[in-house]
Length: 163
Image 1 (cartoon, rainbow, N blue to C red):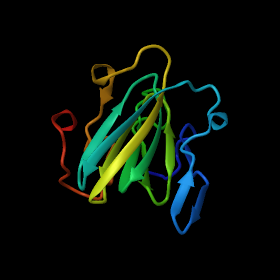
Image 2 (image 1 turned 90 degrees about the horizontal axis):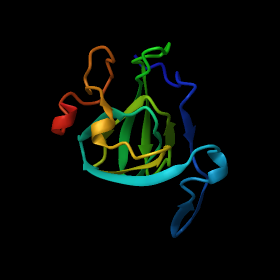
Image 3 (image 1 turned 60 degrees about the horizontal axis):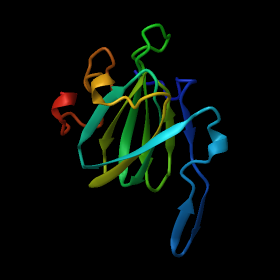
Image 4 (image 1 turned 45 degrees about the vertical axis):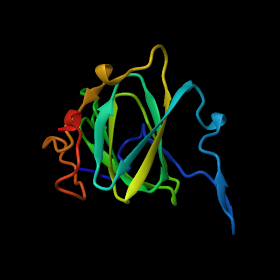
C-alpha cells in the first residue's frame, strides 16, 4: 500500500518556471542539482489515454522522469529484496502543467498510466558502463497482488511485456 513519500531514496523536483502571456520557460535539469550522476541518454514515449507502461527497472540506472505534454499517474515500486520497503509503492501525478519531476534510483521499478488524451513521458538516464536495454531489465506485473497498486483504472491498454 502506498504511504506517500515513503522512499527516502526518491527525490522530487518542481523547476521554477517563468511565465507571461506567451507561455512559460523552465530548465528540465541543472547539473548542480544532481552531483555524481552521469547523464547519458534522454528518452521520450508518447502514449494515448489509458495506456499503462511498466513496471520496468534495472540495477544501475537513475531516471529523472517528467511529463512534457499531457498528464500521467506515475507509480514507483521498491524492488530491493533486502529493503524495509521492498514491494511498497508510491505515486505522483505528473503533468506538463505542474512540471513535477521524480528522480528514481536503481533497483526501483516505475510505471505510468496516461490520464489525458495523449501524454509525452520523458526520462533522462544516468548510468555507468553500457546502456541496459529491455533484455537486462526486470519487469514487475502491473497488477501484482503482492504490490497491490491502487490504479485509477481496472482495464488499461498494455503491451505484451507488461501483461
